Length: 297
Image (cartoon, rainbow, N blue to C red):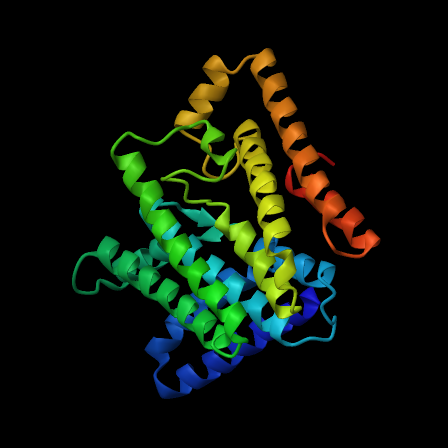
């Protein structure tokens, strides 16, 4: 099914590139930026989560709505990555120059009017807007209950990104992700809603509203485990102050306690999966999926 998601994304972006290039070559630049990032390769994390929730809920593997939902989720991820790169002035993403850097360099090479940095940032932000517009176009055709979840996720992730940036600016950010243990606190740009909503969209498309509560509890425990693992490994979002905390104050005993916390969270996720009204093989798969996300394989 993930191959069909890839095909859907590739077809959309190829059609848009042809259409825009014919109408105005300048407009094709934005499409090319989105396409380059999407095609550069990624884990497709939220599409995988959505498909897991859908199939565990008994969704039809031949269903088209879930493919659309997954494509929309990937486009939303692309938009938020672009904006995050601009905020943090990152130079690389997925092994290629970030959009604001490459467009700023293009501006400078050509001696165009204005400030190169501003041009690069503005162009990248517009590319992010375009990715979201494509996601909205696809999601607009989803059944209402799934679209409402998409709309809520879109809003929450944008507000979460701002809250994270604002907390860091005000010196209120916490390098240790302990606030995620009971659901994310203010300032967590990687909020648990990303995992929760992707699962719930899958359940909604399978017609399983009864899975809302177990999926929410599963997502809450799993997100916390993923965040703590990210801290321990120095994953995205855990550099700077987090690295200082790990290197200076986090001794072997502290790491052991963190691993115990992750193990406890997986016990919680397993308990939810064991009691969930899904086929036995999907209970097993949900438990295995939790270990992959938490980095315990």
